[in-house]
Amino acid sequence: MTTLVDTDILVAIATNDPRWAHWSLHQLDAAAIRGSVLINAVVYYEFSIAYARIEEVDRVLVEAGLELTEIPRSALFLAGKVFQRYRALGGSRTGVLPEFLYRRPCCRRAVYAARTRSPVLQDLFFRNCADCA
Image 1 (cartoon, one colour):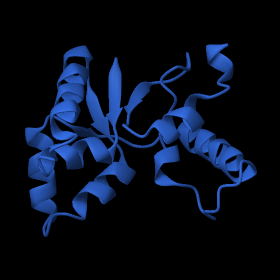
Image 2 (cartoon, one colour):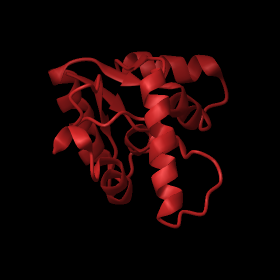
Image 3 (tube, helix red, strand yellow):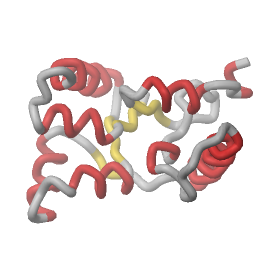
């Protein structure tokens, strides 16, 4: 299985967050045992904010065994649909949230699983998935 890692996992590890670092490191290690561990362009730009130089970011990601991958068109399409649902449920943001640019791990067509610790995003992302029915 291939796992797409969300920025919050990486930030918790990089900053040694007292609440989330241990859990995040465990999730990252478990994902690496199961297969490839990826980030996409959204995770890259969010994570890179903490660094002064691109070489630093790239070094950290290589040392962590993370691979940068493109966002599949199907994931971009699903992001639009999830954003549509978010707005219909009263969400106030006017642009697609970066967190929506992950494919659902429950879908049979999904290429990778997303790792995030946000229960709100997990609920919105996985609710009423036709492939899970």
